[in-house]
Image (cartoon, rainbow, N blue to C red; front, side, top):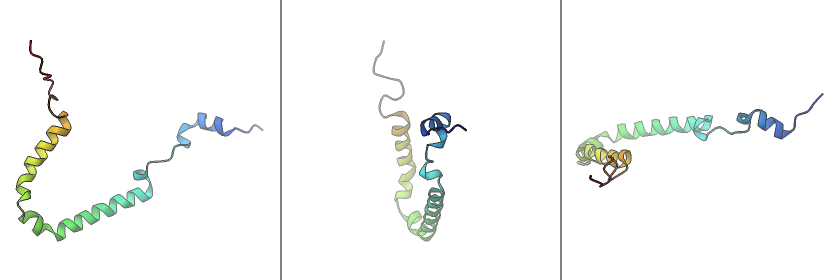
Length: 85
């Protein structure tokens, strides 16, 4: 009967030694569900304050600016490096 060492077991099955991500564990899934429920309840309870405020009018503009900087990488992200031939 042959016994495998820990090193042989790790090289044979590398997935067995990796721990799963926190967000994929049972505690992580419970935390995600709790945060979503808390957000929904807070949004429902404070909906009058959220929709009656003036910042809701500026939200689409802020989203567009944020998407431009994060998705295009700021200035020069469209391929125009300033070189003109």
